[in-house]
Every structure is written in C-alpha cells, then in structure tokens.
Image (cartoon, rainbow, N blue to C red; front, top):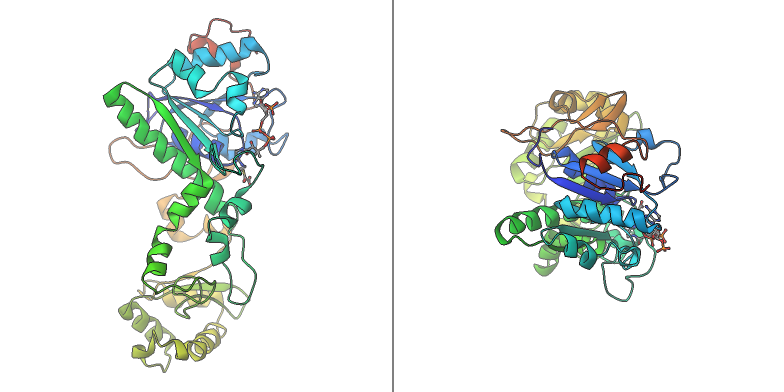
Amino acid sequence: MSGPLSGVKVLELGGIGPGPFAGMMLADLGADVVRVDRPGGGAFFPGMEHLDLLNRGKRSVVLDLKRPEAVAAVLSMAAVADVLIEGYRPGVAERLGLGPEACHARNPRLVYGRMTGWGQDGPMAQQAGHDIGYIALTGALHAIGAAGGPPQIPVNLLGDFGGGGNYLVIGVLAALREADRSGQGQVVDAAIVDGTAHLLAGTHMMLATGTWADERGVNLLDGGAPFYAVYETADGRHMAVGALEPKFYAELLAVLELDEDPARQHDKAHWPALRDKLAAAFASRSQAEWSAVFAGSDACVAPVVSLREAADHPHIKARGSIVEHEGLLQPAPAPRFSRTPTALGTPPPAPGRHTLEVLEEWGVADAAAG
Ligand SMILES: CC(C)(COP(=O)(O)OP(=O)(O)OC[C@H]1O[C@@H](n2cnc3c(N)ncnc32)[C@H](O)[C@@H]1OP(=O)(O)O)[C@@H](O)C(=O)NCCC(=O)NCCSC(=O)C(=O)O
C-alpha cells in the first residue's frame, strides 16, 4: 500500500455517513482500514455494498457485537490497532463493551475517534439526527439561500463530510502524532455541530467586522453581491461568477462588454441594476458559448456542471480529480503527496469478505468469533 499512512492500522466500527467517510479518507491516505460490519451488513443501500464508495480501500469483517466472543475479538484487534473510529450514539460503544476505557485497558496508545452529530455530551447528545438538523443549529443552514426565500440544503456536504468526517480525520492525525511522542492515546470527540461551527470562522469574522448581515442572500459571499452569484444562460444552464477583486471584476466587465463604472462595484444601491445587466448578458448565450468566451480569462467565471459532466471537464480530467476506476466513477484521493503518493484503493468489499483473513492476520485467536 502506498500513501503517507502506510502501516497505520485502523479499526472502524461500522456506521453511516461521516464515520465511513473518515475511514475512506484514512484508507485513501494509505492506512490499513478494517471495518467491522454487523450481521446483515447494515448498509444504507442494501444489496449495493459493492457500490459504496465510502468503503473503498477497506477490508470488511462481519461480527455480531451482541455476542461476547465477537466483542473479545474486537478488543484483541483494538490491542494491535493504532486507531479505532466509531459513529454510534453516545454510550452505545460502552454498552457493547467497546468503549474507550475497555479499549485503552488493552492498548493505552490507541487513538479512539468518536463521530457524532451533537457530540458526546450536551442536552441533545442522545437524540437521533442527520446532517440537515446538525447544520441547522450552527447558523450555517440559515445563511444559505436566496434573500426572501427559504434556506437551501447544501446536499449533506457541509455537516456529514465538511464539519464531520474531515474533523474526525484531523483529530485522529493530531492525536496519532501526539501519541508518537507521549506513548499515550486519547479520545477524539468529533461532533458535526462543532466542526460546522468551526468552518464558519470566516463568516463570524465578517459578522464581527460588521461586513456581514445575519441574513441570507444579502452578503458578499452568499449570492447577495451581483459579482458573486450564479446566472442563467440562454440554454437554461448556469454560470458561476466570483469576480471579487477589482481587477477581476474589471476583467468580467470587459469580457461581457458591459457599459459599467467599475468604481461602483461595492455600491449596494447599484446592485439591483448591476444584477439585471449581468443577468441579461448571461441570458444572451449558451453555457458552452460562455465557457469558450471565458476560457483562459481571470474574470473568475466557470460553468455550473453536473456530477457526471464534471468528470469530463478538461481541467478535472487533466487533474484526474474524478476518475472511472474498476468500473466505478469516483473522486480520486485528496490531497496529493510528492514523496508518498496515494492510489485509489480496492473496490468496496462485500460485508464479511475478509473476516477470516483479517482475524488471522491481526492475530485474533478465536477466528470463528463471527
Ligand atoms: C445515526 C443514528 C441516529 C442512528 O441511530 P440508531 O439506529 O439508533 O443507532 P445507534 O448508533 O444508536 O445504535 C446502533 C445499535 O446497533 C448495534 N450495533 C452496532 N454495530 C453492531 C454489530 N456489529 N453487531 C450487532 N449490533 C451492532 C448497537 O449495539 C446499537 O444497539 P443498542 O445498543 O441495542 O441500541 C446514531 O447512530 C447516531 O446518532 N450516530 C452519530 C451521528 C450520526 O452518525 N448521524 C447520522 C449521520 S449520517 C447523515 O446525516 C446522513 O446520512 O444524512
């Protein structure tokens, strides 16, 4: 296995969303990730486990953790692992006998990563939830959408993955580094509400400076500014315009051949008229035509393409950011490394495919535990 985390052993107790995403990232980075699936798989999309990209590059063991022998097997695996990650409701791992105390008794160096929406404590810790509810409580969902319209759902990118799985990985990596020095593991409590709130640092900065109103669709970076917005083209597609800096804004006006005073960029009273002008300009040609017109320019304009179209965009293609691998269209590992390059992992395994192989390899005595 290549990648900077080559040789790092990760045990992932199977959950949904952000936990598996964090496991995928660790596998992308080269770690040996073993996922413990429950009998019957417990997949979000049953029967389609081979398409579950969040499990690429991992091996799967199926263990019924309601059986003491299976719990003993997982504890033995935790004894030789560097990292354990779990995404149950707080207290579930403890009830199974796999909480941090039980695991640290077997392996004091273990980094024990916990992924939840609300966090390990607080009044809502025990409540069920999903991305949309978690981001709602941080102010993020309120901030997204057009002025006068309802909040818009940013897929489940912001909470589950941006504020969730990513922060679990960051926490795990920091704790691993510290464990190298101290010889001790610790618990990483990654909560989507914390991570999403943290992602809002820049927005809070603008709020503090009085340059951001606590409303959606009226600000510099939420579509309020006409030079940072999305416009419809003649064929019903869209172009994304992000001409923030005066020199790039001037370039936008030049390419569009708009009769407009560049000095009025930040004149809010002028914004409605400017938006109308930009809308009329973009509505005059197709997305493909505008893409050709803006190619190579610094006007910061890009076509809004679909998930499938993205893979065919010349830049995305040249970078190999989204690739077809083993018959599956998927994003490539990110970021990239100069000395220890990463590679796309093995396809998502069927649950339990590696039970015997892994239990043997990780030296777990009772290989029949599952
Ligand atoms: C998502 C959940 C609300 C789902 O709630 P539940 O279905 O009630 O699951 P819980 O985690 O509470 O408990 C899981 C139960 O499964 C049992 N369990 C788990 N693994 C096993 C195995 N291998 N074998 C046997 N039994 C098992 C475990 O003991 C618990 O049983 P008992 O002990 O008997 O109860 C919760 O897991 C949760 O809050 N997780 C943290 C946050 C999270 O992941 N949110 C969703 C993000 S995804 C998202 O937002 C999105 O996709 O959109």
